[in-house]
Length: 132
Image (tube, rainbow, N blue to C red):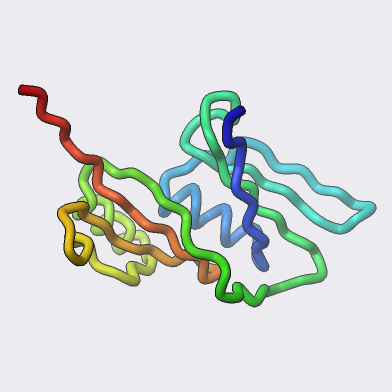
């Protein structure tokens, strides 16, 4: 078994695709409209679906926003340089909700970003493994 995708319901599909492709650096992999049931699916990711997990953005045509509730946590993405990544995101008008820095009580360096729908994205800086 392998993880295929995570689905997020979004109110404005074009705005969400713009955020995930232009701000977060993903590629739009495919997009499909379902006229009968009035929804559109768009899949975005860093690699093809056959190679790794992607995001499915679901837009129900008659819904412009969702209540996120309190059960959703976040999506986590590994980055090489968290400070440079956050600078790029800010330059592209992305919203950093937690500045980069070590997690409380630990050494892992993290930051949080919020997408246009209010979904949280945790950035985790890639750890360098030193072999002795």
